[in-house]
Every structure is written in structure tokens, then in C-alpha cells.
Image (cartoon, rainbow, N blue to C red; front, side, top):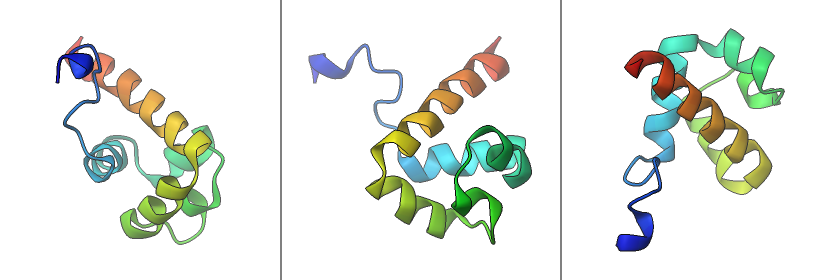
Length: 75
């Protein structure tokens, strides 16, 4: 447990990350900033989760955007 104390994403699910980002930015913005088809063509949380769980580089980009998003909303 102590290994996770410095992980800002600890306890936050990928689904919650994606839901928060979509609600704040929208699919269009996500597709423009992270060039993956699941954000551009018929986007949905379900299809995006399926892709992101199998694609580490894309998940990393989404997590980085989420950390940026957190800084924006928390000042």
C-alpha cells in the first residue's frame, strides 16, 4: 500500500478517468489530442475501455491527459 502513496491515479478506475475526461472535454477534443480511432469513430466509453485496456501507449496518453485535467480543475 505504501508503494502507491505517491501515485496520483491510485484508486481511480480507467472507466472513471475516461468518463471524467469525456464529460469535461468531449469526444471531439479527445480525438484531436489523442489520435486513436475509438475517440473519433462512434466513440463510447465501452469501446474506448476495451481498446485502452489492451493498448498501454494509449492508456498512458489518457492517464497523462487526466493528470493535466486534474491540475486544471484543482488550480
